[in-house]
Length: 139
Image (cartoon, rainbow, N blue to C red; front, side, top):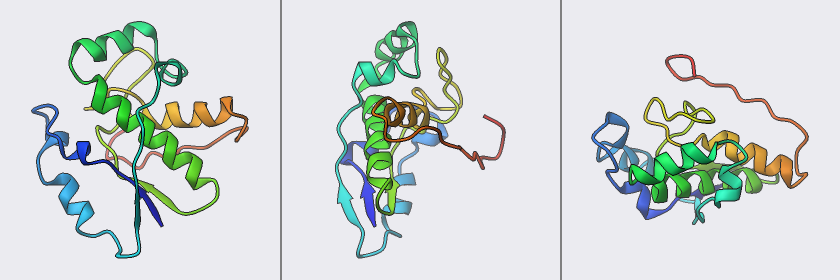
């Protein structure tokens, strides 16, 4: 199994509970010994624009969260590409599933899944996808 991960995801990027120290450690400590760590690259603005407005991207930049959020979206893209042919886990943060095209919400700045799936669709690697959100609340 490949695990998409970068040391930057240890960063405490805000004061919200999703950014609390130790959250990533709890997962890293449970990874199987045969897991292969694969480093992501940040999503490009062109990729982010597939799911987000220019105003939203600018707002994330002005909040000082762009670098880590773009890296998380890039990690989702990388994991989605690899996941087409082999088991893959994206160990990324900040999370993204609550972000909409023009709004950050629920500790999510870019919708990593939407960016990844729309990138795969643009690359003609997929025609459609289904996302099953099993979070505690809707989003």
